[in-house]
Length: 153
Image (cartoon, rainbow, N blue to C red; front, side, top):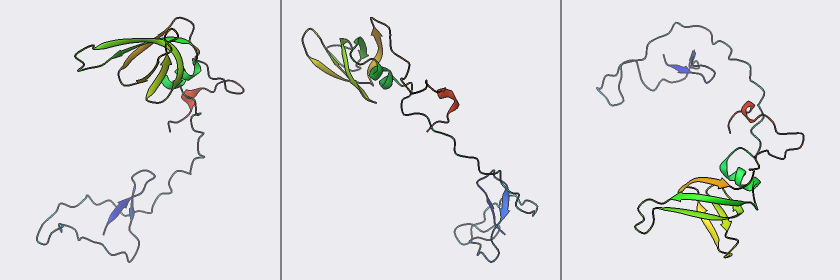
């Protein structure tokens, strides 16, 4: 007799009547091989699982991630400190410029004096500094929800 575990909480339940068991107790995968069986539980009716909970709302699209904070501060002057390992010419580099755009894995800044634009991957970035106040509140209609009350995606 095989016992399987249901998804609601690991209580054992009986296999369907008439379902063929692929292995017998003590039989291994290969002929002649012995295998230790699972402990047997007393046969009982299957307890009903907890009622299905209503799906909870997911996090809003904007979250407190670095790229979102950088997007909120688009157009502001920022100093980016980055460390590049294994570079023989320079190990650390400082970039100063206006935030043009930010993605999950990069930030684009432009130097206002030279007009040069930098596409910097997030991986080597150590931290950012701003010379002015940082925008952090998300402009949601009706105020920002408490992000801690939503389950992760």
